[in-house]
Amino acid sequence: MQYLTELSHNAALMCAIINWVLAQVIKTFLHTVVTRSFIPERLVGTGGMPSSHSATVCGLATAVFIKEGPASSQFAIAAVLAGVVMYDALGIRRQAGKHAQILNEMIENVDTFKSIDWETLSPDERFKEFLGHTPMQVLIGMLLGIGLSIILCNTVFL
Image (cartoon, rainbow, N blue to C red; front, side, top):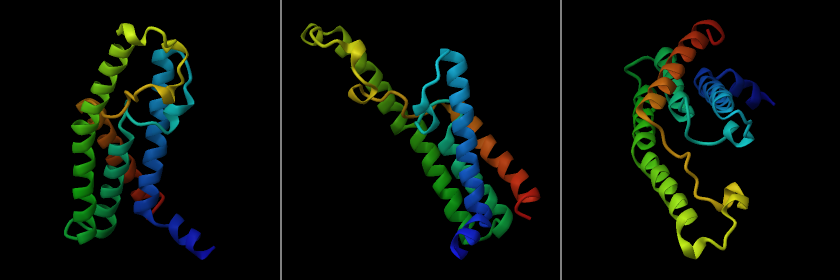
């Protein structure tokens, strides 16, 4: 039980988790408004606005910066991790999402696949298109993570 108490007072961990949860809720809300349908998968899924990956790692790095200082090894690790995660979201995962979208469109239109009732396939049977992020999604996620962690570290996790 003591471990749970100690974890709940770990500012860096709590900032990362809170940023992830908030970004996922915002992402789900925006997706629901745009598509006019609630899709529960958006609460934990990848891709979309804002980038929860960016919010999480930037929230972590910001909290470590505030609590441990810019010269700490912990901040260096968190900052490099944030850079790698955001680069991956913009690059490889974004391209994989584009490939999935094209493959899904090809399968829908190729004669050999006409016998498949594509509309009735479950989401698990289609290629996942929400993988990566646009630069704006990553930027907004980054700003959310930094801003919320500054607020949390200066109010809740003093």
